[in-house]
Structures are given as C-alpha cells and as structure tokens.
Length: 157
Image (cartoon, rainbow, N blue to C red):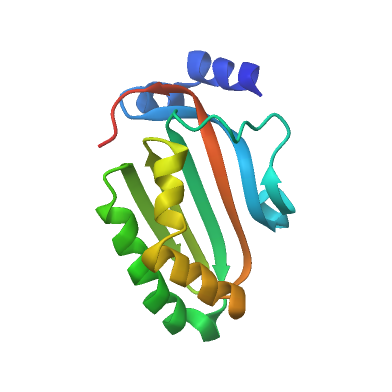
C-alpha cells in the first residue's frame, strides 16, 4: 500500500494539485464497531500492529455512521453536547464533519495525544451520548477508528 501511494504522489497529475494542501499517512491502530461496506468488520479493540500504549503522540480519529432516521432527532440532541465537549478541548488540533442525509454521518479529528482524547470521550456530553447510543442505537452501522500518524505534509486550512 505504501508503494502505491508513493507512486501516486510521484507520478499522478492529481497529486500535484494535492501537494499544496494538507496530507497525512495514517495507520489504523484501534477500531470499535464495524461496517462491511467500508472494510471494517465488527470488532472492538486494538488492530494487529496497533499500539494502544503509545499515548504521547498525536492521533487521528475517524467516525463513520449510517444514521437510523427514526433516531435522528435524538442523535442530534445527544451529539450537540458531545460536539461541545470536543470543541472546548484544548487537546483538539483540528476537526471536520460531514453528513449526507438520509443517513451518512462522519467526523474526522486530530488530537494532541490519546490520553487527552480519551478524557473527552469518557466524560460529560460525549459519555452521555455514548451511553444513550448503547441503550438505543442511533445507527444501523458505525465504526470508530483511531489512527497513528506515519507522515504529515502541508498545513491544515
């Protein structure tokens, strides 16, 4: 996979247009949940080669979910408190989100370190949203994937 990316960046015309933005090479190290259509099978925990104890380096987190429409209002209420907690954290380096209704909801965030990210996830509004989802799921399918950085280039807008 790395050789293919290297070749793309060196040779493909599209890569030249991407060179001025931000890019990162990420390696998945932990996954919770699953979604067959995006290649993440149901599982919870460290991925092969993952290093959960590597807590001082920056990490990226991708969440991807297929929303149950009948739970959309409850999801929006619960996620508002979670979003507030995330955005108030000094450990948040960058974040973005995308929704394509009727069902796709994604977030991508970068954190200064794992411990700081975990402190947001296990407390306050984020914890409440997680507990609400566990009791009565918001999603048909969801995957929460943590990545370590292998390389970064450029600057985030």
